[in-house]
Length: 310
Image 1 (cartoon, rainbow, N blue to C red):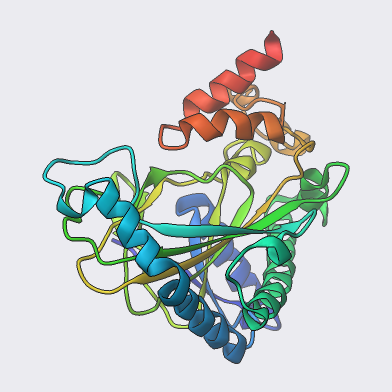
Image 2 (image 1 turned 180 degrees about the vertical axis):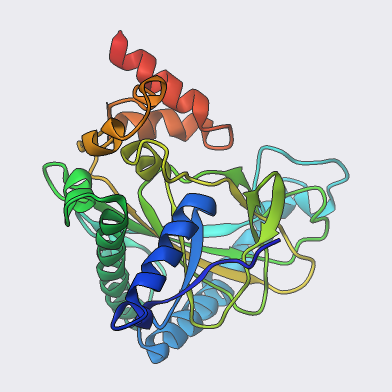
């Protein structure tokens, strides 16, 4: 198995730019995932985010998680569980309207740090979208504009912890799925692993690397690129030891953004592939996804196509 793609962002400035862009293109076409190093987010900020996130989990969420799992009888499971995940989460919305002030149990320092972190990630997401445009032959800003809708993109962060699990063979930390949205930036634990992606029919570990940001592509980029780039199935395998931190930030289209394959990319395709992907409003796709997240994406695309014809 070839190595998981790691992109050194410093390579974009100077002689290595062409090789770095090629590496990004290969990762988008063949993996749907890559890992960023030298991405410009200060190490001190990442360390603070990690310290405060783990502290918040221990103080405010760990006991609650244990009680919930015990109440559902999941601390003593004997048969495979397919309708739940072994995870403790909360969600922060940044755009279009932030909700971080309303989330209970977050102290002021944590709120301030997460706001700062989100601004850095938003900037990286938009930079990556322009790099993808360059590789795809789209004009600069095309993807950001496609995501914009009437009020700008939707951007939010899912803060997750995956506690030790007594029976990881019977329940997943997070069941296999593709992400519905646009581009996802993940800051993950560098000591406790668990994230895997499906490549060539095999589950491959996404290596935990200190201070890196893992990027993956969502369903909307598959539609806009007319399948040149694919969203890839991934999952979290629960572990018997250690709690795994996962902070995933989703840079998605605005709710009323109309998503469809970029015409220039459709023109490049052969006749039989020209109608492969549907046109839809992002919010409509999300309503469908809510009930079908852990199923194959193709029926979702087909359902949107059928709805467009109705």
